[in-house]
Amino acid sequence: MRKPDPFLVALISVVVFASLLPARGEVTVILGYITDILIMAMFFMQGVKLERRAVVENIRNWKLQGLVLLCSFVLFPLIGAGLHRLLPHSLDEATWQGVLFLCCLPSTVQSSIALTSMAGGNVAASICAATLSNIVGIFLTPVLVSLVLHKQGVWSASSVTDIAVQLLLPFIAGQILQPLLHAWAHRRKKTISILDRSSILLVVYTAFSHAVVLGIWSHLSSRDLVALACIDLALLLVVLVTSSGLSRLCGFSSRDEVSLVLCGSKKSLASGVPMANVIFSDSIAGFVVLPLILYHQIQLFLCTLIAQRYHQKHQSGL
Image (cartoon, rainbow, N blue to C red):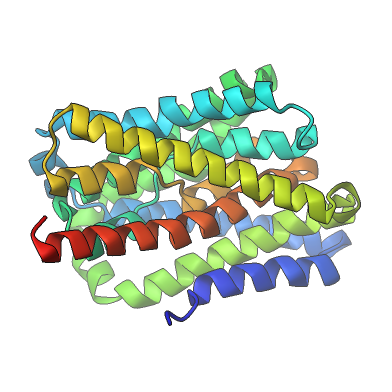
């Protein structure tokens, strides 16, 4: 039996801790400054770690790369908006905003690559697809959030400035310094990964503390959590089935199909939590990240099973 992912355990623990001991008063202000610095550091390191050569070499497979972007930024928002219209009263409006927000996020990088490798898929193509998705997401996610949520204030001059200062500029700085720092970052990959995950946990704690203080658990019952899990699962299943069908329609090889299915169905917690912190006010950020946290766990569990199934299929030569 496979052991649970330590990061998922830590993530659940942080949510529980924030529920029992949320940050208040001056502590919240201090944590706000710290999380802003950590978000900038995370995106700086993303810029440092990005291998431009891998992107350039695999961008030629435009059909696969385009379909991954289509799944992330078109298919997901359409399905989310459809579910919202079909089942508007299944969740409260704040939680629905979180569901629609996760639909606008880019693909995750690390787990997409790891699961593609496990499944025997096109790893180089997955590196390119996940990387491109995250670069595009820095620009496109706030625009999509504004369109999908019909909130003009989401894409305002202030939010543009915040996105540029906290996400885009550090990323560009990391890219500029990448030739100097890439080897150093590669040698310290494990340490940087721990710092990245610790940063995400602190951002989740800060955002969730705001939500707890504002009474998130008085708004959400166990029935609401089950409904949210079902909607997250429905999102994932529809995208998995659709992406698999698209790969067959386009005549992809089995290896490319793995990349499309496993990259196109993912949503990035590492990008999503900082973006929620930048785009949304403190009063709603905690509500917004809850659907993403739950989706992250569902996608890892289900996509791991799918990756194992692809691996067995490749081993049997089918």
